[in-house]
Image (tube, rainbow, N blue to C red):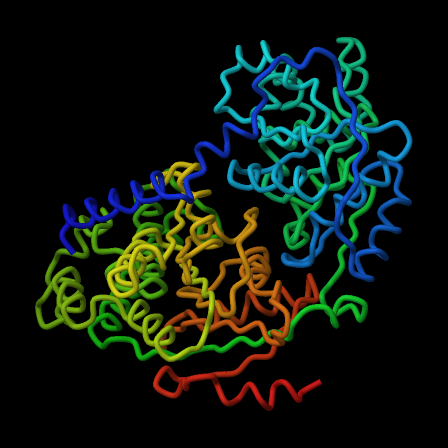
Length: 546
């Protein structure tokens, strides 16, 4: 694919999003205040939906907490619906003021619509950086009773004077008491009664969202944090969570009260033959990495290899080569063909084991042999499977765009939505792509930006081009097919694994961690690509398996 052709196609797709009925620009404008809010508002919430029995049980437990609580509930099981019911209970007497934190603009739009449509809060507003600070001040936006916002926007308007002290106190073991004294001395009053921190794992630790939660906790404001994976597998994150939250409630999907409301989970591990020349490239680069690691160990000590050092030239080269090698296998050869790593001398020099050819030359031969074995495999599965909606995950942006283009060429632009990060799409274009998938497209091809914090519509199947790198990504990916439509009994995922590489071990390692920490399980079936049949006959026996 020539770069000019690729760029022209991508601009064409972005223009399609901005000018199609799925464009979100006007919607964002409608969700912002247009008139000055004269006085501080309060709201009584009246939801128009019912909770499942297990959600009602969780709600009772949540209502018993007077301070702050983080609820870990797998994606797809109605965390937002639970939060809405919680707010309804709190608002019964005198009404409440709600600050609803979200990690991204697309999710902010979705949660504001949820408040208006499901909680009957007509004057729920979404406040983001799209509204200039002077305009926010003139409109008195923070006097509204129900605000959905990104952490940075709220922090800029309310916590900027305390930026330095908040950064210092974040390092303390128990920062809340000192922070309360400081805020009291400054006569600071937190402007909302309750904070809902949606997808809170995205901003615990170093960011504006963490500062907001610290300030709210110090001011004795109620906090209900929602997370599919509250980073319990990270000791550092757990310490940070404990600074704010009185308790952490995790509800695994294997709990009997939850289990019967979600489909069974089936993971196909699809073994794909690795193209010979790509395998050879991978093996020789691994050998070079090993040599560099021995040099690093001799020079700086073996413990140095455990650090993510970017100071020494040898360490930088090692990390660049490892990333290249992993991506080359996990996302396919075409995903790395423009990497700057190919300029490294060792990749351009003749090697005896390669018949005097350079690694770069053998890689180019591998591209001609098979442009991208992962993309080819995904296309074959989509051609053999029956589905109404499908989601394809890949870490590499180029892989997503290459696969998205191939599918659009076959099925038309209307039928294939593409979602990548802010470096390649604006937040408005991301949200428009999600609306496209919800309203029209049958297939969504996405990077990890689609793994969390977005209300992605129900899909029948998923394909993982590469293994998730941690338990959070595992649960977030799986959660996209746990919200099955009526009658669907199985959440099906195809994980594509290049044979004779590191991928299988990586996949199984993350799976074991996810099961151990979060109790998230699934049945695993190994398949060779050529043996995947339409409808998967093995499903029948799986349905009978209790």
